[in-house]
Image 1: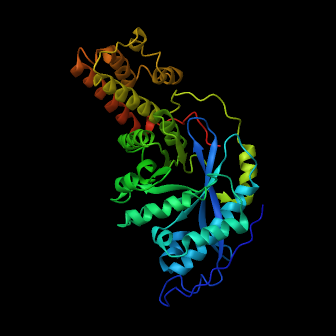
Image 2 (image 1 turned 135 degrees about the horizontal axis):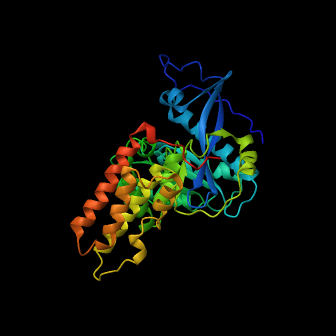
Image 3 (image 1 turned 180 degrees about the vertical axis):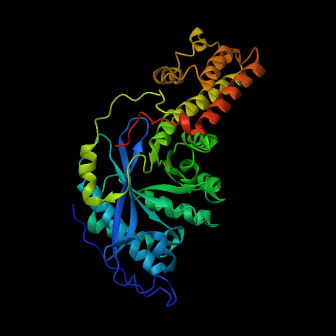
Length: 378
């Protein structure tokens, strides 16, 4: 599929801007990054990312967005929405409708004529299916007029367009926006996921946000899934959706259909880790499950299988890799010895859980123990 580029005129660029003059003849090109259901392997969406082509160069948003006026940003958004709709219409049908997401800044959404703009693009280049287009609100632009913003988003959703709140965690207003605005999708800022190999405790943020998302009826996308190890950890953790280089790099629209067709068939996914970081994520889930049980008004007995360190998914992974006789492997065995005692001996349970976690963190920092993740990104 070939999408004709649109030229962007630059009356709003200041004369002293470092990008002034470059943008006059620049052309808008969308590249698309897949969003994967980490629990099934299905590609459920694609995010349209703006690039400006100048000769043989593709400029990233950081190079041109700061100098754009609201008029220029409006023209850019219109073209990105058009290309998203064009891609959506060209994609083969899947078991569940894939969506294409377009970024939009809050000032533009609140500007006069925005709804008319969206209507006109849908009328000219649509129709699109219900929920097939998603508008991602950039979190860096907070609004104090939540009532007006909420009304505007309800009108957008009435058009069959879903709304995502992008970059959760990058601005102070995240929880307020989640509470007060009608959004369908939450996107965790990539800074939380990109460094998970060095800061595995940041998995707590993803686990907590995933729980919050499900409790308020929204879907969570974790950005910054840059490696197959991070992808594995988030999958084991139970995160819904992921996006990043560990899944796929952004690609031109004409390459998307072939990339989708070339992906391996979806198999049966399980919670068995395929990396040491995945084992760490699995341990976090077990600990959280135990803490949930501790808070129940009635005691819940573990099965005898909880005492077997080879029966759980982490144990299966350790056995496959021959890791049960390592320092952290033995810590895993000790944790299973006390796992069922969360109520009778909470201190012993806590010490066992913490000992295993700390040994995993030490192992993750040891370069000699960083073996290749079994999972391979498509």
